[in-house]
Length: 178
Image (cartoon, rainbow, N blue to C red; front, side, top):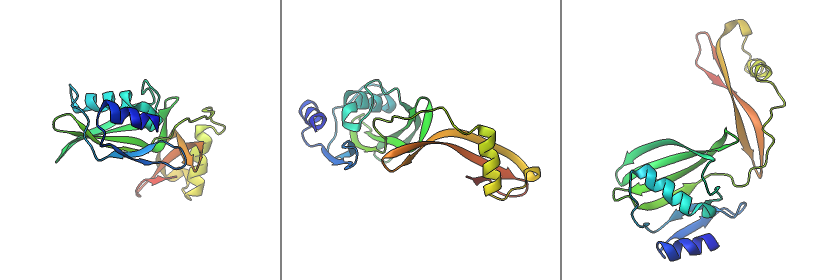
């Protein structure tokens, strides 16, 4: 809550927060506009997050975030960052910063997970994960057109699990994800 007080004192006293009851970090920051930032909307979003990282449970260097997309909206631009841990994507963990056409921040939605502590060495090999997915989806290996996988961190309540996200393409059918 000290981070919110600092933001309200340094930037705009009108900011309101919806807190995550489990983690204690801000899930949503709204009800005000920040001071304008220079540069592109992506620069404004990153500078704002860097200044007030503690409010969102982010590292001070924002090294765990990668910009996913930036798209124009009727009110300005929406900049979306995806969270990574040891270069592994965290499923569903994003922070979205809404930037006005004057480069002021007016809304932040946070689904990032603070303080991830996880061994990122997989206990299951990638090829074994693909074989398991093919079996679970009842796909005969001779009919597999393409199979791909990506190591991900999957949130599971207050814990996180390392997992393989596998996509199997069967000849003549749409992709199946397991």
